[in-house]
Length: 78
Image (cartoon, rainbow, N blue to C red; front, side, top):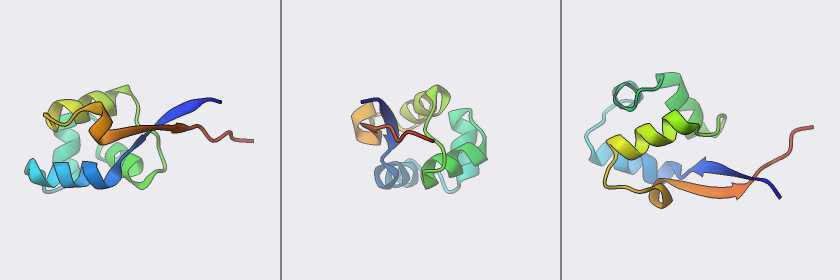
C-alpha cells in the first residue's frame, strides 16, 4: 500500500501561534512558500511537499518531523 505525508494541523497551528506567527502570510513568507500553499495544506486540499516540510521544520524548530507530520495510507484517485 502506498503511503503519503499529512500535516498534523492542530499541532502545526499551535506551534505557529507559539512561534509568534499571526497570519498564514507571515508564516508562509518565512517558510519560503506561497500563502495559498499554507492554506491548502492546512485545509487538507494539498499534501505537503518538500518545500513546505522543509520550511515548517526550519521556522518551527525545535519541532521535528514526527511532531508536525504523520505518514498515512495514500488514497487512490480514480
